[in-house]
Amino acid sequence: MSSRSGAALVLGRPVDAIEIPAGTAAVLREGTEVFLLQELGGSYTVHLPGAGGLFRIEGKDADALGFSPLPTAPEAPGGRVRSPIAEDAVWDALRGCYDPEIPVNIVDLGLVYDLSVAFESGKGSAVEVKMTLTAPGCGMGPAIAADARSRIERIPGVRSAAVYVVWDPPWSSEMMSPGARKRLGIG
Image (cartoon, rainbow, N blue to C red):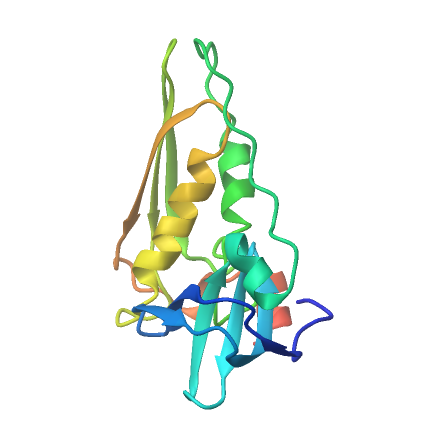
């Protein structure tokens, strides 16, 4: 979490957001007062007291909150790709992806069930991920999966990425890493 958490902020311009937990798109108006709840993985979770809800704002829109926009990842180099990407690079990318309501990344939450990397010489690696959500009705599923896919696609040497949300086996808190359990106070 950031030392800026809890800060009252006024939006300096209209900004696209995603309503939590419904996952619906929204546009927050310039001049709206919000409270920063979470700043993890390159996105912001804010509370709008008047609307009674939580919203996720992407890092590219940090300027609307009065912050510097987050740097973008470098583009993958052009040309022929001669070797597969390391699976560890994918796991590291996924560790930057957070559920906007929970201050733990999706890997440590135990949401990633399977990861595979297939390499085609000269073309690069195709990555497939199977993940779940903490609850089947979570409207943020498409946003979290899209964030995971985007992070994987930015890894140099990746030619394609697919992220599938699956429900078998059902997620439970026992799937979390010991560090995640400790952070969330689950014994």
